[in-house]
Amino acid sequence: MKEVREGELASMAVLFERHHRPLFNYFVHMNGNRELSEDLVQDVFVRMMKYRNSYRPDKPFAAWMYQIARNAQNDAMQKRKYEVELGHADISSSHGMDDKLKHEQEIELLRQAMARLPLEKRELLVLSRFQNLKYEEIGAILGIEVGAVKVRVYRAVRELGQIFNELAGEKAS
Amino acid sequence: MNCDDVREQLPDFWTGALDESARIGMQAHFAECSACRAEAETLSAIWQRLGAIPEERPSRTMRARFDATMEAYVQGLRQAARGPSTREKLDKWLAGWWPREPVFQFGFAVVFLGIGLLVGFALTQHSGSDGEVARLREEVGRTRQLVALSLLQQQSASERLKGVDWSYRLSNPNPQVLAALVHTVNYDQNVNVRLAALDALHPSATNEMVRESLVKSLEKQSSPLVQIALIDMLVEIREKEAANGLKQLAQEAGLNTEVRDRADWALKQLQ
Image (tube, rainbow over the protein chains, first blue to last red):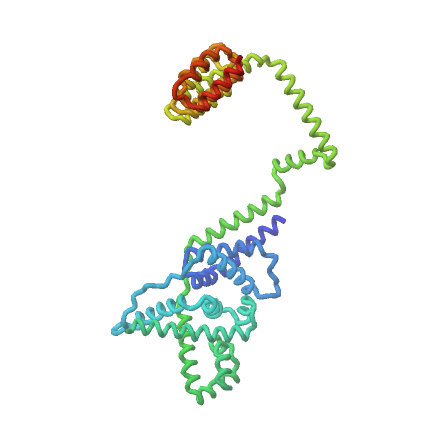
């Protein structure tokens, strides 16, 4: 029994090395708070240990892990009512700026646009674009059909584009 | 391929999951529909830019925290696997002695109660604590008298009432307390306190000093309420010596008629 547990501990360490950064990024995009996100990553691994019997080897591991992560995130949101902190980088007109700076400003605008995107849409983009999960896996996490995932991804990108253009318009004026 | 098909397939196009024939179909649609082409270009650019957002890096302490968390978790599991602690074992062992049948439980309880009573009885028999208890009682009595006396001298009427109340708790008030109560009956400014003190003197009515003081008090009272209460009490304790005082009172000019009637009635009672 003891050996089994120690074996589990070692495999958890492997899982941690592999997944802690994507998980951390998922949480940072979802709640905008780095400290909270680090706590939530720890929470996810404790939950994975605790509920390891609920894992089905025939289903994608990522789906199981992100389901746990979503629950952890939702619990934290309910408990702490975190608001996403929007970046306050001062982005002025790009006249005379070099390309690198322009690129950085664009990234910052996009970050802000993401933060303004409704939570469900943001989550969809985080999972598909940042976590590089397949639409099938996202469907398994969210409990919806793969076709529905694609429709939602399309809508999320469209809304993000609108917000991005609005922000860019505000900064230019 | 129409506009809706294109929208459905754009997400696959972005991830590179779109197959060759669908790609060709999409390109053909773009050649005809400039609106779809423009939208696809804009949205694809957004998708591309999203990829440029750099990855957030967690702090270096995360791994250490993870190790500590797992260590603590496994320790907890080992503790659970090791089984119950000595304390829990002892509790279980003791619980094993307790009978399950309610009848035996009741029997045990009765036996223990009996043992307890016997031990208690034996201890009190031989401790010789009777003297101590008596001394203690005496001490408590003295304290009560002190409390009663000090309360009777308070400024506030309610405090003095409390003092009268305390005097009730004395099984055998000493002359000092009785004198204080008599003084209260005669001179307290508050009618209620005077009435209460009068009542408090009732149990000590066999005391000669009290009886004498009550008779003398007749001429000192001015409140009809206290006068009537005093007359009633004198009748109750059958104080014949009060007759003279009652006669004088009845003849007093300007006396309340009810008091006068009561005095006449008392005189008849005491004859």
